Image (cartoon, rainbow, N blue to C red; front, side, top):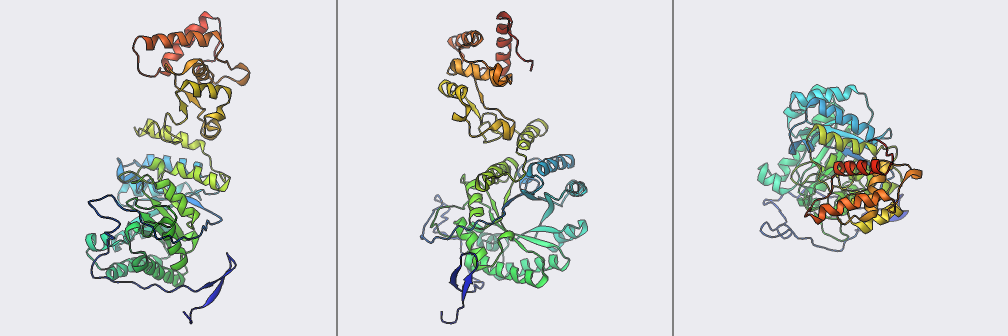
Length: 465
C-alpha cells in the first residue's frame, strides 16, 4: 500500500490510488462458478453491493454482426442479398457512422465475393471487417483479402478453455497472443472476441489477458479492440450484482484495471434472459463506445441485440439521431419479409405488424382526438408507419373513423370523425359480422370493399389506394 502511487484522475479531478496489477491465475481445475450456475437449477443473480460509476463516452456507436452471428442461425444469405442489406445499413447509419462497422465470414466463396463487392462500394461506414478463429489458417484468409481489421475468437471462460479447447489458461493465453501478434506483424488491427465473458474469471484470466493485449498494442502502435461477448445472455445490469454477471462490473474491469480505452471497448449481447437491449445500453453507460448488434436480433438461439432497438436507444441517450435515417428500418423489414421470407413477429417493437396498432375502442377514441395519447412517438415521421387501429367488435365508431383516416391517408382538412354517416354504416356491417359469430379482426381488404360500397351510396369520394 505504501509504495502505490497517488495519481490525479483528469476526468473526475480526484486523487486516486494506483490500481494493483493483475496476473494470470493458471488453475488446475476449471472455475465454472457453480454457485452462480448450478446446471440443474435456474442461474442465480448474486449481489456484493460493489458499485461502479457511470462513465458513458462522448461518442458511442453501433457495430453490426448481421452477416456473421446473424447468419449462423438462418439460411445463408446470397452474395446479392448481403450487398443489398449492406447498402441499407449504410443508409440507416448515416454519414456520421452511427453504424460504424459490419463483420463478415470469409470461409465460403459466396462470403468472400460479398466482401469484395461491399468494399467496391467505397463506403466509409460501415467499415467492412471479418471474423476468424484463433488459428494460423484462418489468419491467412484475412491476409489474402487485405482487410484492415479482423475479429478473432478468444474464448475466455473455463467452460471453453478446459472443456472445449482442452487447454489450461496459460496455454490458451499463449495461443491467443500468438495469433494476435501475427495480425499486428502484418499491420492488421485485431478485435478480440472474449467469448462467454459472463462465465469467465474476470480477474484471474480476462483482465491479465487484456493487460497483455494492451502491451502488444503499445509495442506495435496498432489498435487492439476488445469485444466482451455475453454469449449465453447471463449478463445483468443491476447495481451491486457480482461479476462475472455484472455488465457494468465487466466494463469497469476492462477499462479501469486492464487499461482498455473506451473507444476500443465493445459489448456483444444475447437475449436468452430477455436482457440483450438493456445490457447493451448499460455497456454504453459504463464505458464501452461500441455495442454489437444484428438486424431484428437474428442470431444464435434467442438472438443478438436488435440493431434497430439500439438506434432508438442511442437517440434517447444522446438526444439526436446523429444523421441516421430511421425510415430505412421499415424498408429493411419489408425487404426481409418479401425477399427473404422472414416473418417478423407481429408484436416486435418498431418493425412488427402490430407494434403501433391498437384494437381497443377506447384507445382508438383517444387516437382520433390526439395520436400522442397512444403512440410512442411520431412513427409516421421516423418509420413511415402512421399509427393505426385494427377494426374489430371492440373498435367502435372512433376506431373505424381512425382506420379510414390513416388507411386512405386523408389530409387534416379532409379527415372524418366518428359522427360521419359512412362511419356508422361501416360499423353496422362490422357489428353484423360479429353478431353472426365472427371472432377474428376485420381485414384491410374487407374494409376497403365496405368503405367503397358505402362511399358510392353516400356520394362520397375517397382517395384511391
